[in-house]
Image 1 (cartoon, helix red, strand yellow):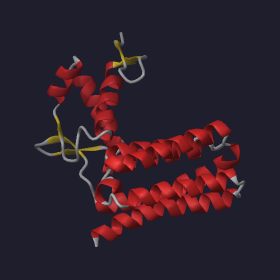
Image 2 (image 1 turned 90 degrees about the vertical axis):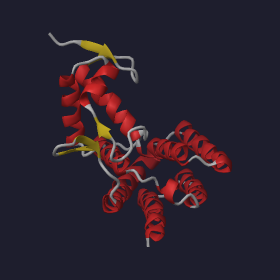
Image 3 (image 1 turned 60 degrees about the vertical axis):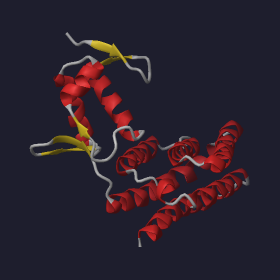
Length: 224
């Protein structure tokens, strides 16, 4: 008989393995489990009041998503930040998210655009007391509003998978290059202007892709 628990994030019944998976993944993506953090099965099991078995199952799922890796004589660790992996992840996001945003543009409602503009204004206000992690979260939410209307569900799923991979290697550019944040906000305004002005899907895609690549270039310039 399968035992169910209540997910803290969604409030829905989930298996113990799913609960462990959701909890660990959320902690990796929000930075509580930093790169290199060692994941101890018994400790996590005690925290969640489950045995080591569902925790082990959860870790195998996270390993398949490349969020953690198993090391001999050590166990599971959150993947370390890899500049090369970050570059590859950002390049992929630029391509697939740009395409999804271009296709979504003519389908965005006034409510969608108002939501995106409100998020960008929150990002602008946050520049005064800059918190790179909070800014990054708002940035992700802004872009999700724009690409989620894409009529191709496979492309939307691919963008979300790329974001998960990016979060795994997640050396936030806004942590490393905080000066990129104001430029990003202004580029968001220009992107919204293109969409509201009825620019073609190709134009929107090109700008969205260039916007992502500009963030990557800022990171790479700092590393030189």
